[in-house]
Length: 87
Ligand code: FES
Image 1: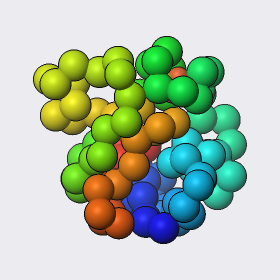
Image 2: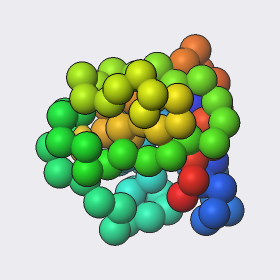
Image 3: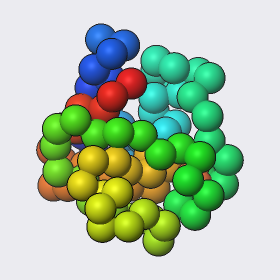
């Protein structure tokens, strides 16, 4: 598991093994957060990351986009670290 801080919302959610960041945020904090494919190819779930090391698991984003964003349906925190999102 790892933690994701929602900077603007002022909440922190825990992402268990086997659960996406998207699902954890929808379940614990923001039930209306948009998504579509949940497989890392449509881009609907793209969010800005403010801090933390991302383990990118999508095939869509460019290297430049990966500098400050991630697709939260598939990507995770690297090595159990903490992410801070602009949400
Ligand atoms: Fe489609 Fe995440 S919901 S890329």
